[in-house]
Image 1 (tube, rainbow, N blue to C red):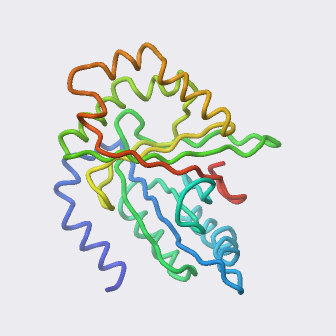
Image 2: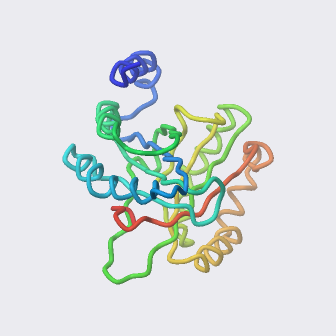
Length: 243
């Protein structure tokens, strides 16, 4: 099926449900995995060169600038490139797929998220010349049903994101999955100065008195509202605007 027709059909099928939950300030965030092989003709290098020299400039020309490209630091299924992109609307998402038509990869997996009210727009870390590369973490929380997922999202919106910031867990985005695998779930991304900083700052978080009070609220323990947590550690690629 022509991708333009496919996206148009998907947009039509979900428009009414989406419009009832999407606020004007909330963005769409796509997680797109380009699955690769280490081939003798250098597939990973070809893809990265094309993303850096053709695809990213074309995105930016379309006004799509909140985007990052990441490789796998700790996690399964290497090699791959993860593209994280913020869109204002479905038309921008469609444009990004049209631009990507000629990219070379083995398979692609994608999911679409709606940003949280507590962090409605993707936050790009400040670019600082000469600093060591940051470490990024992508975390996914699955829930038993959408009711319990809503409770976990509510925790983030109403206190947990603020505690993250206080303890050095720096957010890039938080989003609830609209389309993707293993629903219902939410996914968020954090950044750290280093893996050592990650360990130190998570320790600050889990011992913070405000977190202790929040997680002790009846009905909000992980055992009641979170069925699985998975994560991967990522490094920003050299051409990534998010780094």
